[in-house]
Image 1: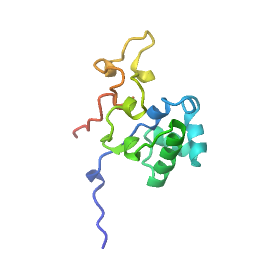
Image 2: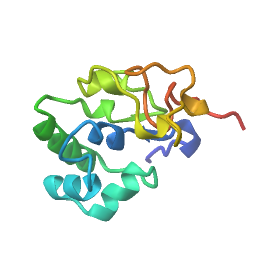
Image 3: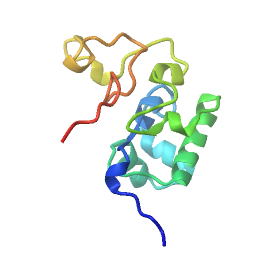
Length: 140
């Protein structure tokens, strides 16, 4: 008999593939298509993954991570690009991407002012562009 844990036993998969891709010249423009090609996976699957519309298989994450590693020139633990409830091994995306410190594109409004989500976030300290201070589960 196999035990099936409740789906509530697991937190959501939070990913920052798009954020790491933004730190690369190759993937900063048409990134999902290029990453899909480099990893030999479906562009539609990559798009659904980076927009948090699916939980990928381990093999898909491994392929995508390997493509990022090849482009960036260093090893990346897959748990640093996708993690349950956003518990990444490396907190800052810039630390993961070996960046001196930046803010993602959505951190600033059209006038160059920080958006409310990024008000207290210094360059180089953000976790993901969707959760700059880290993922916080909502209580039901």
